Length: 310
Image (cartoon, rainbow, N blue to C red; front, side):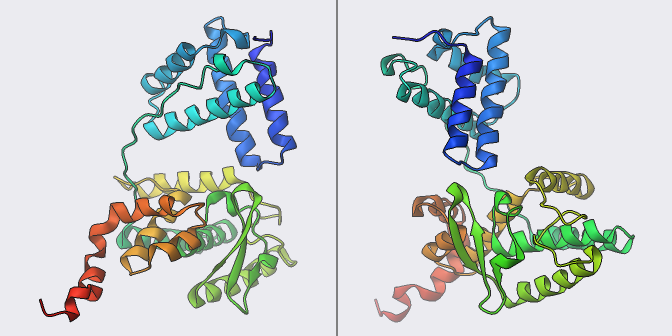
C-alpha cells in the first residue's frame, strides 16, 4: 500500500540516506540533480505525489529527455539507473509496495558503442596550445592545466579522483600513486619515470608560486582544493580553443586514450583492468572489443602458429 508523500520529500529522504551512507559528493550531486529535474518536470504535469508516479510517467519523462533534451542512450540509461536506485530505496523504506515499483519494469536502451580517443597530432596541438598560454603570462593556471592534462593522459585517472589527490599520496621513490576512487576505495597505481620528472619540476613551481608547500597536487591559485566543475570548465575552454571534430575533450576521453594506447602497445587486458581500477574484467573487455583490430601487430608477433610447422 502506498503512503501519501510528496515527491520532493521522498527525494529529500533519499538524498539524506545517500549522505548518511557516506557516498561521494559527486554521486550524491548526480542523484540529487537528476531527481530534482524529474520533480520539476512532474510539477509541470501536475504530478506532486509519489503515488502518482507510474511506469508510464517515467517512460514519458525519458521520451521527453530523448526528444526535447536530445539525451543520448548513455544519458538515458544513467537516468534509468537513478530511478531504479531511488524507487528501490522507497521499497526498502516501505514507503511504496514492491509490486507498485514504477521503475521495476524500466528497460535500458541500446547504446552505440563508440569510444573517442585523441590522436598523436591532437595531443601535440593541445600541449603546444597550453605551452603558448604559459608564455603569455598566465603562468599558474596554464602550467597547472598542462600538467593536469599530462597527468590524466599518463595515468588514465578519473576526473573525480583529481580534486582529492595530495602530494602525500605520491610515492616518488617507488613511483606509486594512491588514489581515492569510486566507493571511497583506495588503490595504488604505478607511474612512469617521465611523469616523475614532470611532477617533480611542477611541484617546485607550485612552491615558488604559492609561497608554501602545496597540499593538493592540482590546487587553486590560493592553495585550495580544486573542484570537479573547474576541471570540466578547463576542458570546455580547451574544446573551444582547439575546435576538434569527431572527438570531445574531457578527462574521460583521456582515460579512453590511455586505454587505447596501452592495448595497442601490447598490454594485456588484466593489467589494464588493474590500472583502470575496473570492478570487473568485463568493463575492460569493451576496449578490447573495440580495438581488437589494432592488436594485429601483437598477434602477428606472438601467435603460436609462428613456431609451428603446419
